Length: 379
Image 1 (cartoon, rainbow, N blue to C red):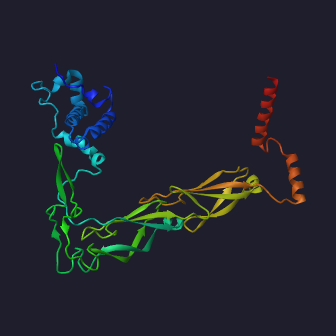
Image 2: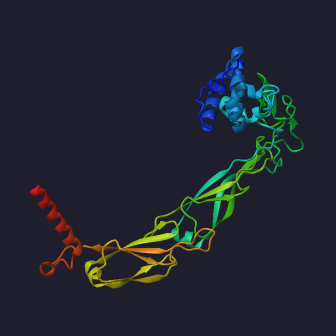
């Protein structure tokens, strides 16, 4: 009989634990028992290996099914289930790579370093009007940005000289360090990962390979952009350190509030106050449109407040599409104010002549209220 500890007990999870629970348990225990966090503790290294072995089996649905049925015997030599046990095979790297950053504050790095660092990305905030978002535009912007130093062509070294490979890492930009049973690559402290050292720095850029200049750029704003739209200009960010590739420039758009329209995606909305006479008898009025035109809106007799009227295809264009939104006009009935004595008399006379037929909503509501109080009183 196997003396190995149950894999579920090793990971401190129930047998019905899902993949997310398994992974969370593995990350927690691996960080706790990792040898680098328990230097000189042989028991921690053994515990760490047990945790990894358990996770290697339980994260694989086929291996987990075999383990649930046969236990540790499923992975013993001659069992027919893969032999040799899970151990620390090729799967270990994929299992453990996702906790590297938690353990060391860095991701596993591969490949050879170099002195050419990519430049930083830049952000530029641009405010445009709703009309400009409708029509699209080409805007000119001026930004201070780091560009390649002309004196040293971006190398950072004085003209006539060249950077030399770092003596600490041999130009790799990284040094290897043994960490328990595996090896990590860390940034070289001598050259900060660049792989090169400059003995005689360029006076124009102080060895950085770049200088600050004012740059004028042309930005194309397409039709239909919305508030928060981001436009990327590749390679228009800061120049890279010592000849490295330039970063990108990101234009973030914000739309100013409009005098008449409120935007909802590709649709436009506007509120129009009308008199109660127009609402009662019907009428029409003109409203402006976003394309600098105007259109008529007909109001039928008996229109109630907050009613919306749709004007097709008078909204905003959809970004990178041939579709266009609609325009919605919402009427708001304005209550008369500052009435003259004669106007008050006329309204009073109108009220006396009104009935449930002329004001069905209010009449119906107050009838229900009356019935409600009557029912409550009788009960």
